[in-house]
Image (cartoon, rainbow, N blue to C red; front, side, top):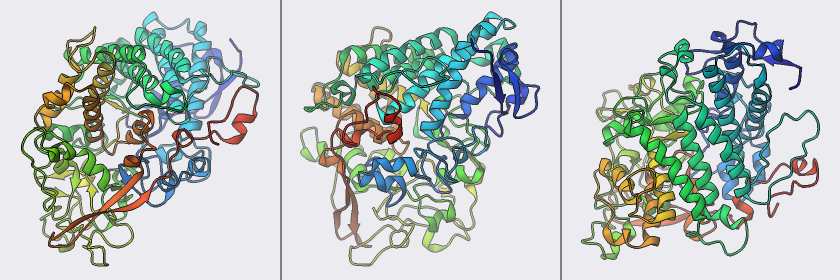
Length: 624
């Protein structure tokens, strides 16, 4: 234990209905002795609180516009999205307008306690700060003499969780990274591990300790009474199980399993790690069964997970759709939150709120299938029943999630009086010769022929538009770090890898096939076709397609196509749009950009050069 002074900065403006002031009766920016920090539960929890603010809000940590997806799912010409498409991943260091920038949009390191997410540290700096704070807590646990056993346990449980979580945040983007378990006062000497698996297993030990120490629900504990009813954002046993499973599944995935070596096979996983992941996810599903969480059962309830909540509350808390497992601390301004909610909608509709992330045709075509539950490719094959897809009517007979989350040409935006005629219906046609609809041609509009509206509020068919309709002001939308749907999808993937499609896990009587069909049932589409279930490769493709639909536009896709080892394949490199005329006499796919992506160079962000020069044993990522 080190006897040193610590500066305490109070948290401000979180979506929690509390702040550090409820724990720390000291002035902001005061310097106090470490023994005083951990003398009571209130002061100990006050120190822990800052780690919540270091969890980066992907959707609102950019600028006044949003740039957060980076996969094949959307197209944005500029900012970091454009750099990724051009293969310029080293651009992250100087990127000011994305959550992966080293500094904020103001060119500053970031103020940990700033009420706006865009002015707090981004992933690299924030994660390192979070790891250090967690280690300070764990290194000084012997000072917690004034805490009850239960209070000390929850302080340590949060520290173990965040130490693991912040390591995973770095690992998702930069790959294998040392598991730092001490408070460095001088030079860092921990060598970079040889494999991703090595550090993932070490991090897993932190999650195991967090699971042992954290409560199921803070509202049921005496130390949670101070913030009773406002504890939804706090880490729990369920969150620790969910992220434990994710850490293990990521480590089991092909990219990590092949460890950057040639010959990567997208269907080859580490089955032992996948089995461990499935069992961790099973524990979350048991908590759902016990009433802690609830999967949205239909598409109407689904809205409550994405945006249908009163302002200043988190989504995913409604009893019929309690999918929130863990999210960042929030704290974004109303303007940033609205910009996130309309990120997929052109500016003539959403005014200056829009970030103009455009859903790509390749993503929509390859993943959002048909009402019969088949992909368009499988539907057209005729191998699984009558064909529904009609190339002359490509927006008809689609998976209901297509209609719920995608704006296509002629879709109704609003019929409200006072709304400009050009904005009442989606005008996304472009015949390729300079003739375009109102939402297709020009800066800030859709180049692809689609808009996405997943987080875009709607009441009785009415959406927010530039004039005459302020629906968006009534709601708060949020990209959730971990929600129950994600657990179902990851459980199915891990279990299929470990045991196949039709065998349940050791800890829960649900098969991978049943997990996916549960999600399909609420969308109103048929179960996975038995012939697809019987084919291991086809079923894995279907699992991935289901994930692409369910988690669309939530900043998971770039990570997924990398960990599956497919990002360098042509199917995932070609971002396309759709040309068609106003009367729909023809539809023609065209190439917008071919992404630059080589394996393994473009699968990991490069470390900032000076990071690899601190000491021997920290090599740069391949190709950089």
